[in-house]
Length: 307
Image (cartoon, rainbow, N blue to C red):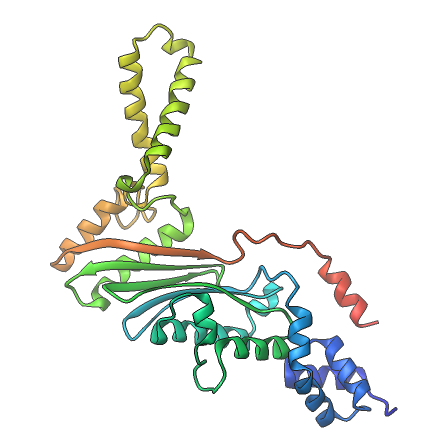
């Protein structure tokens, strides 16, 4: 068997983007020949995808953009935060977003069967190619799109959170970009449960009222007050609930720009532009939310690879 060095492994990794252990195996199988090692890795692509498919992918990137007037937000997962910053991975995420915008898939299965831009491959096949190139399990998790109105995207912390805000206005899209971005930043920061108090469901209202009534019943200062008075106090307390949980009723976080609720900020900003702007909807994706993450000693794993 031809000898090869750690530098050869490093070079092969840089040329292919494949993990160190896979590069080492390829060089062993190819007797140190770089070209044959690359070919070997290509040939093992599907098998590598299958082996990595079981790994937990809870990192990656949430990404929002607008393509030809269509707003899109996607989440694509990888195993490590490091890969989430990889240029090839980021390009793949942007390609997936373009597919969502341009081909309007009905659901995730439909998306995976669409043609990936600039190739003859499906999104699923391109994802499998990326698993080989990146060396980790990669998975397109979810997407959303707004084809109507004016959409404004915002990506927080390099892909930790992706927000897409949809507005209704007769003003030019570029005129309302700042309004949309400020709203998106508020959504990213505070993650409101509801967009507006009118959307709070009856069961949530009933539960909140129940909690307030119990709290007042246990408060000595409230002892002896008539039920009607307690009901009125509880109703007043709901305003605090709305201001904490409903986007349009929240205090606008950029207090140096405007003092008041988000709802009033939108009205004020639109008036200054000489038109009207209505908040319609928004989507907030936070990478990995709801995925059970496997705790690993990454430093120990790296150390084991270089032995």
